[in-house]
Amino acid sequence: MSDVETLKAEIKKLSAKAINAKMNLHDLSEELPVNWTSIMSVAQAAHDAFAALEAARASLKARETA
Image 1 (cartoon, rainbow, N blue to C red):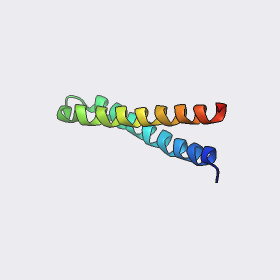
Image 2: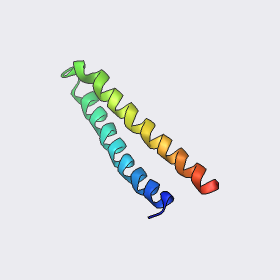
Image 3: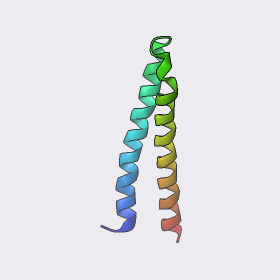
Image 4: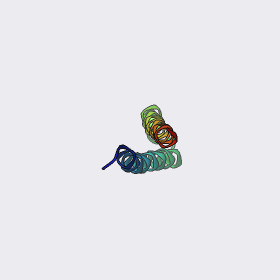
């Protein structure tokens, strides 16, 4: 598999993780004020997931345009 194909597969996995993190954040928001103490950890997980996805997409774009 080429680097670009490998990166595309990784982006697909990261996208699924980001969607899952988004749903966890959404579910938490619907349950508030129950579990309010977990807001920061759930939000950080969502932030990290989307940051990783954005970085991978930028890397793919750079490789495709190189």
